[in-house]
Length: 259
Image 1 (cartoon, rainbow, N blue to C red):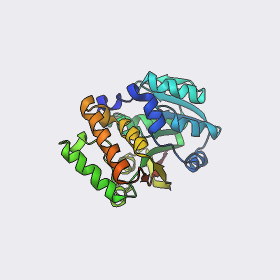
Image 2 (cartoon, helix red, strand yellow; image 1 turned 60 degrees about the vertical axis):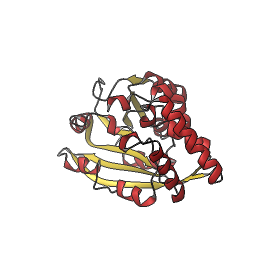
Image 3 (cartoon, rainbow, N blue to C red; image 1 turned 90 degrees about the vertical axis):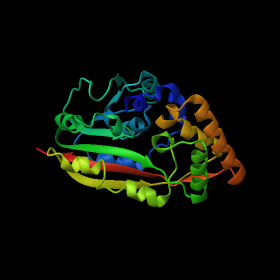
Image 4 (cartoon, rainbow, N blue to C red; image 1 turned 120 degrees about the vertical axis):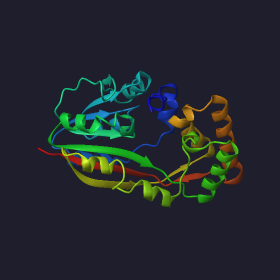
């Protein structure tokens, strides 16, 4: 897990350019849920979510373990970044909100909920955010999966494997993780999740850059990863008019600190 979690720094600029953003509506929604402006952001990365939170007038303490990712965040927002993991960060709570976008799965599952509870004031808001992006063209999903099969890749060795809408709906069931984890902790009231749908058209090259930004791609042997992306992008360019339509949904799992 740690190997995947710390794999992004070497491609920090690719990550920042290729990873999807988050809709403005998400940040307006989060701001409306907070009892005050003081927010801790866990796993802030290159600041894709940080910028949206700051634009809402919030006071954000951004925590990011990789200095290369943090450098891009600082240049984007001007905010100071704490170079630390969630577990090691010397927090100055309590906070009105704790937000983690695309990063909560990298934290320690044994301690993260207790630590979140200890850092939030009563009534504080916990928001866990992910982008899920099934492809509109199911035939592209089929073609890419066939390429993965040709490369002999299985399970976690299939970097950024695309999914279709029906598979996304299973992943986004609010009763599954992390919803079940939030609901089980006695320090929180789990409120469910909110969905923000949007769409993005990508060229073959842009989709290839997205694949390169994933942790699973970064942990493949370089020669395998390079050849894989080249095969996928060539197929999309040749057979599918150089167009991939991603039907993103940004999902925010939300809970309130009891007490």
